Image 1 (tube, helix red, strand yellow):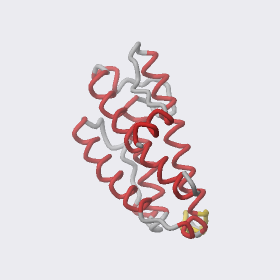
Image 2: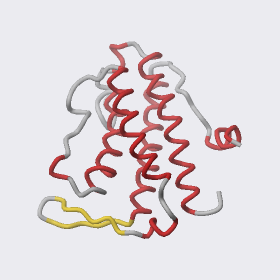
Image 3: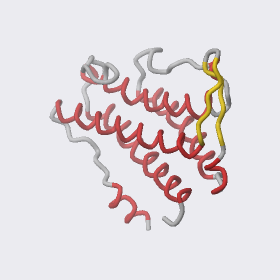
Image 4: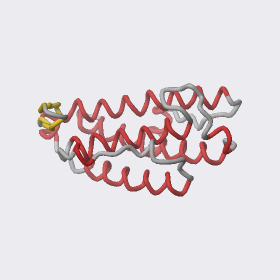
Length: 168
């Protein structure tokens, strides 16, 4: 990784690939009753935590970046998603996010994203928005690890350095 942009793009590729492993593990390794049980985490169930990550990407990339907050609705509060439904949402969101991230130019990172939140206008540097989402996903992945371990199930841990080495 030579530049900030290259580092951000690589971390987005890493998160994209690993997110799919967690999605499959949630639905293939966990019994249905445990997938949807309120675990007292940041969001009630394991599926809710995962869907929240998708919601975060939707919120920042669609509703904040495109300044469409009045149209925003949360996925996670809609229903108990099946694997097929989560796969469809993840594919749609990931495709949009990765297309955006892959076409960025270094000078884009310093752009200001301005959006209306209620009656106030807010702004954030695109670089900060992108880094926020990397951190958000990693935070919730750690939470998912703990929830898997509480159920005596091994999460699909994927070390960044091993992943990067395998990509070369």
